[in-house]
Length: 241
Image 1: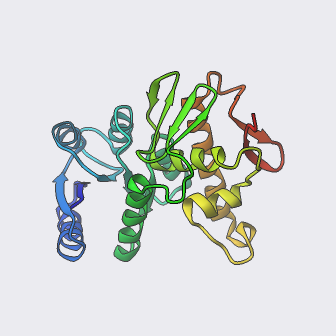
Image 2: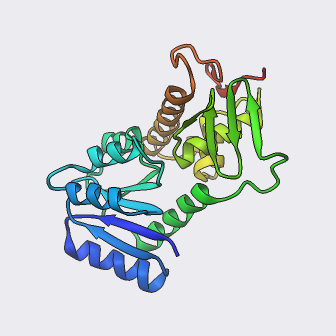
């Protein structure tokens, strides 16, 4: 049974989330009402996913996210009452796997939780081998971990998904729309261009943020990447070497 840490300073919100996730979905739910308590509980316990509010007393959600991500790749979904693109992008910048803006539909939240958990824990079916070796990099498919020069590199679930997609399709160029469809499962009839302008820009920036953060973790010099390359005006691809 999966355990979720709900971090929010609104008791009514926590109560509602607990009911829906425990009674209706069968998760174990723990809670924290400020950033300091959240970090203490995280350090003392083991959680499969964290629902993290942006606006928290004592320590805000962004800093909590950043501190957790520095030591763990536990999936984090940020909840924010701020309906601005910059807050969402900043949440992803600090390592969140996904976000939802309040008020949100509970069915959508449940779907996001299940999707993030599947990506985090799921085995790669049909993989031809458990370890993919590329230069000094070793991608362990089954336990979804990555080592460079024998040292493990902490990746989020989406970062691993992007790396795995690239590494198993070396030389193939993916534009932002391709990546959104394959990694985030966002699909638009008629393509991404059919989405409204603000949504399109946010989705595109989401891809760019994740690519940049992945490069910072796996490249010796992110400004001159050796693995994840850019085909200007088209998209991203993994070295074919």
